[in-house]
Length: 123
Image 1 (tube, rainbow, N blue to C red):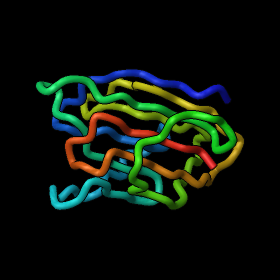
Image 2 (cartoon, rainbow, N blue to C red):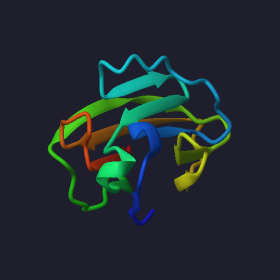
Image 3 (tube, rainbow, N blue to C red):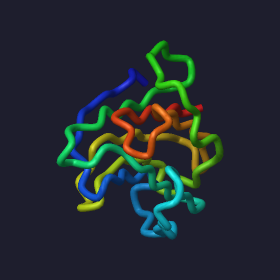
Image 4 (tube, rainbow, N blue to C red):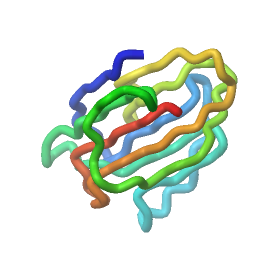
């Protein structure tokens, strides 16, 4: 996998990182920066009115610049064998096809709830 980067204006300051078929939304209480279910992760980001959030997806071995704060390090179920990043309106931002039905993800941000950078590492 070659790392992928895009800029997105995220409505409601949220991005979803999930199995392509998952609708198992986590309960978002607004008190954290990441909320997770077995096949669905929600991560806070920069409000759309404040500008774009840079979203990067990379394999562990790839040399790509990461933000400073690790905010998530766990496994995500991917029974469809497709990982996607999408907005709350369902627009796909990035996607990755995988042979695994369960994969370890590590997510970095700049540490603020309104982060302008989300880095997803596929381990």
